[in-house]
Image (cartoon, rainbow, N blue to C red; front, side, top):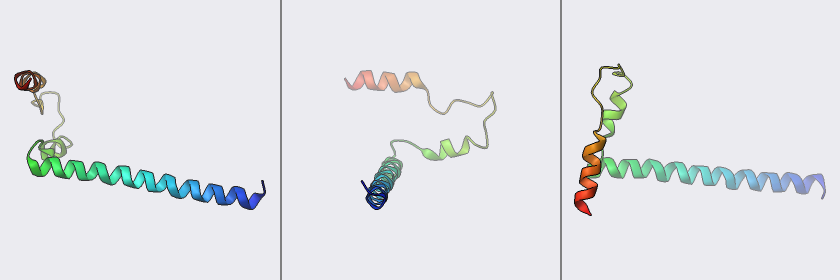
Length: 74
């Protein structure tokens, strides 16, 4: 293979890799937006965690309640 061919392959690979990362990132961001609008999860609590991260802070979510809800639905 010539040097120009390798550069072309590298350029295409880089383009498709960036396209895949872009698609994955924006689909994740959209899913967060959609869950926040539906009310499934309040992401404001998580953003406030940055300011209030002491050891005596109340937990954001109770894991046991979530598991009980899942068991009741089944």
